[in-house]
Amino acid sequence: MIDLKGKPFYLNDEGVNWVEETLAGMSLEDKVGQLFCEIVWDKPGMDIDSLFETIQPGGIMFRPDSGKNIQNSIRYLQRKSKIPMLIAGNLERGGSGGNGGLKDGTYYGSPMQVAATDDEECGYRLGLIACREGAAVGINWTFEPIIDIDLNYNNPITNVRTFGSDPERIVKMAKGYMKAAYENEMAVSIKHWPGDGVDFRDQHLLASVNSMSVKEWDDTFGKVYKQMIDAGANTLMASHIKLPAYSRKLNPDIKDQDIMPASLSHELNNKLLREQLGFNGLIVSDATQMAGFTVAMKREEAVPTAIAAGCDMFLFTINHKEDVDYMFKGIERGILSTERLNEAVTRILALKASLKLHEKQASHTLVPDESALAVLKCDEHIQWARECADQAITLVKNTQELIPISPESYKNILLCVVTNEPTDDNGFTPEALRFKTLLQAAGFHVDDFNAESMPGGLKGNISIRELGKKYDLVLYYANMRVASNQTSVRITWSDFLGEDAPKYAMDIPVVFISASNPYHLLDVPMVSTYINAYSSNTYVVEALVEKLTGKSEFKGINPVDPFCGLWDTRL
Image 1: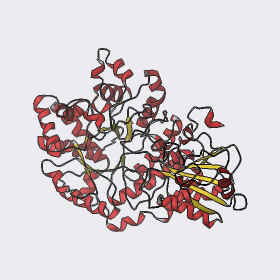
Image 2: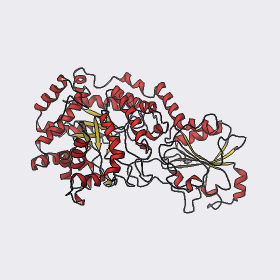
Image 3: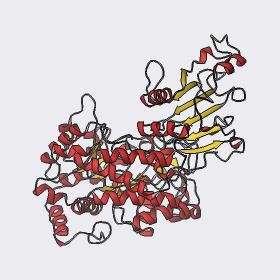
Image 4: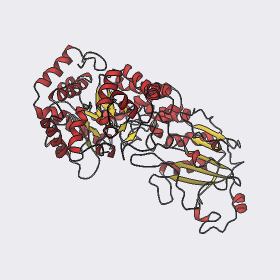
């Protein structure tokens, strides 16, 4: 039974009546439509109307676009929809900066940057900026906060997208985000159930594994999920991650080949999540184009099985008409029962009612007018982003006590930019170029690193001694950003001898700054001075220069072990 008046829906009699009457008046086609949350991209050929050719989707998720464009699209969608739609976005770094959100929103900081402040107010502000700016365009469902525990530094997807490795700090930050979301009448989705950050593989590319024992999971992920559920999290995202220990405990007869990722697992969703942890809210699958979903079973079976196994909404389609047809066929074949279909749709409607979407639809207030866009990158949000950067940047290692630096002591700097992001013709990202400009304004002479001109390079005719006379300091600005569908976020140097690596760190002082990945000491243990900044944006760059030059102290507290458990990284 679904408790519509209890946590997390808290519906009054009018809300319950709307859910029950709406469900009673729906056709099979209406119900199946509600199961789907589709996607809108800012790309050529995107046709919103095509998503309505077969069904009316229950929700839509937007990928990055301008606030005005997203707002106009949402307004069109909501007017087109008989039942008000859930409108989702990935608002993990504020209004902008992540793999979702608004191109012209405020990039507050990555979750790990926020965690490095160890200040729950910063977690609250992350949610406040994200949800104020998201709500301004008509988004009512944020696919955050991420509550994964970053326990494996080789994991290619969690990294700075998490609040770190300390469960208590994760809960503190996530609760702050959720509080801000609810103040802005926005649903949250805690993820990635049953917990990412253990495997070194990416669930976008395969069904990855949380290899913890039952006790280990209970003491870590279990506690985090339980606290967030008890605090009122209203939705949860079931990922393409397996939890074999619990699957075997809950189903002792299960065969290895039948252990499913959470997006397809009855044991994890219904027994562990619903019965043991008491989650009464909505479960949405993670993106179903991901290989972790598609390799588990034939897609024709996987589409209805996701709902039958406990997911209430199906996130994205590969071929819209085909996947919708698979859902109908799954009902015909008995994979998805009418009872389970009605249960899923009830939770979808209950979430909408809890957000008062039916009331807003009646009053034509589902989407704010264009004046609401003024909150995007407003002065208050920018100031908060600057304060977060100031609190978060962490001096991890300073064994030679090089910092602070000044033009008197380190006038001539050789700047090396290491990135997997798009650059200009000189190899600079906009943030790295801003960093260089600020250093020059502070009185430093800064030259660009050229690996070919280094000693031993293809054009290298300079000796190490001459290099040491020419430059007082080698400064690295690394922005190796984690993203979906990468198997590694390790540094790759320019050639087989690594001419751009800090190989002359014993001859010339080196300062290494990581703006995105907290684990680069793994590859540069020889550097004596190492800084983690967790995000590459203007506010972080400005704070970095202030701290490098001694105008501001380092305040960040490591949210993970940046030494990767290795002894040589500490030397």
